[in-house]
Length: 258
Image (cartoon, rainbow, N blue to C red; front, side, top):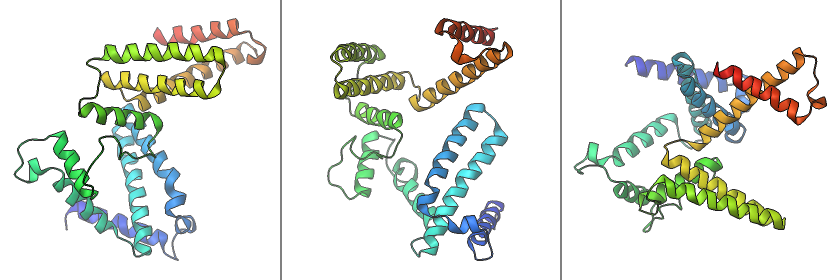
């Protein structure tokens, strides 16, 4: 057996031991449902490692994601549904089937061919370009995928300027409904703005989910610096005016650019 095979089998055996009566109580108690938050958390930690360009951290986080795969596969094996071997076979078969231009006689890659294969896999005679996306995706990612799929069949702005103008239009519409103070319309227009700005991000090849996470992390970092400076000056943030807080905020921003 190859080194890869040996290490993979070793990891599978470790999982089997952890789930056994002689294993770990916490691991034995886990179910598909209880593990759902962890695979989402591990996926985001993997993204963070990629952003940080930290090879050691990336290696560790890839392992953590793989652990979740092994965990779910082992639970299903215990329930006589499928094994990790079945998972690997299903993946290999799908990769080969979806790449006939690599493993078959097809000439070149095309989106329409990809969609046709996916439709056949799902046993559907007709296939909506945007109707089969996973509703469990984060909202920004779901919006981006919908827009990508619609664009792939030609329903798209000619350039980013069209998407930008649409965003401005949606902001104007929000301003109008804010004056009416009708919550349902306000919610709808806020949603339209978010959808439009995701479209702008798509044109600029920016992942909106990652961009928003980075912006949020930046805000947290700066706000914590504001708190630190205020504490050093014996200020209580709650006693400061908005003008005072803004001065501290600009001080932090200025320090970052030096």
